[in-house]
Length: 264
Image (cartoon, rainbow, N blue to C red; front, side):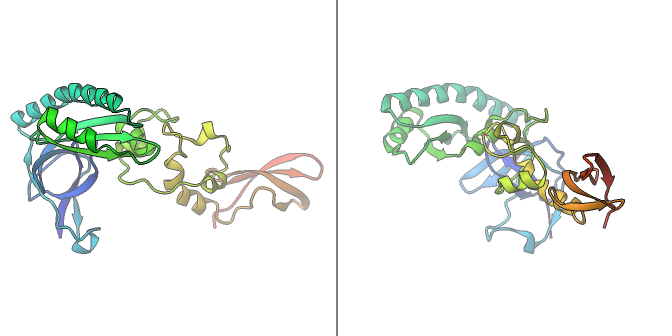
């Protein structure tokens, strides 16, 4: 059994469990972690939790946190962030010169500046081999270009969702799960793309992780369009509120009534 915390690698890297190595960390702490090619930095985004060998999702060994970032480490991280702005401008200029059909989204240095990662979006495959050579020559560092989707772009750039809160993807979601229009229908949401889409233009992630809750709440409730009897009078269900467990029924007389459903 291991004590682990979830760490977001660099600013836009993936979220993975890291062994605490017996050290204590708080949410928001910057830490230095051990990676294949040396040391990297990340930010703790969860409280410590126990993890069994069987819980590890991959066959790779569990990586470890080396230490809490020192003042010198933080200075290096902040310096990297400032320097990357000029790096991004240079990359965008080179993309235009090469006339490549791609859009640069984000760039970041590795902790020791030995590698620069560029994240971009494009409609199809892009041959960026010459671009990599040019950038490696300019910055004297290993260059890695990663093509990402629109959901990843929203996760990196962040923002506020329709609910007024920080985007779930940029705050706590580790992975993107499939979200379907059927989920919106079962939650009785308006099938208007502007109402159920996030900043990325795709269906909102919250439709997916709230889906099971709605399915549970809907158990034993009549569906919209179903005919039921209310005090001996036949009516048609025209509205369902899963959270309140109530339905609106239009009776044969034209009267509309709201009735409560018992939990089952």
